[in-house]
Amino acid sequence: MSVLYITEYAELSTVASKGGQMPKEPPVAEQTVAISGTHAESSAFNAKTKFLRIETDAICSVKFGAAPVATTSSGRMAAGQTEYRDVSALPLGKVSVISNT
Image 1 (cartoon, rainbow, N blue to C red):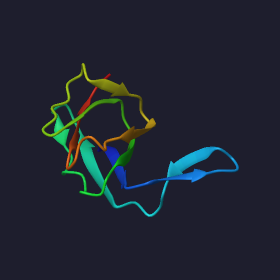
Image 2 (image 1 turned 120 degrees about the vertical axis):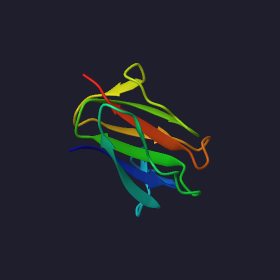
Image 3 (image 1 turned 90 degrees about the horizontal axis):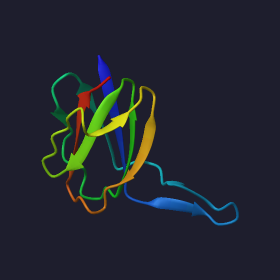
Image 4 (image 1 turned 180 degrees about the vertical axis):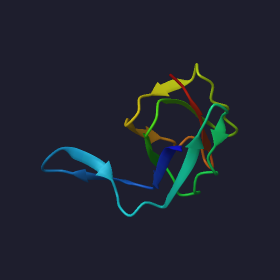
């Protein structure tokens, strides 16, 4: 079974002397969504969530929103790809995923 892994973060840390930025651990929530030929939605993000780390183990397309419906025309991710997304404008938003080629 292919899976989209979702890690939800409330804050980012800045390492002043190095200029780096990364999510503050621990995450506020973690969830997974099975990837198939029909779109599937995540649960609503935690009310504290501002940033996501999403990782996929299969080629897929994702879409974000209040009631998103991913299609194969939505943003594509390669197998093994990891993305960080700012979802601060989507309180209690969701991500939808569908398999792609």
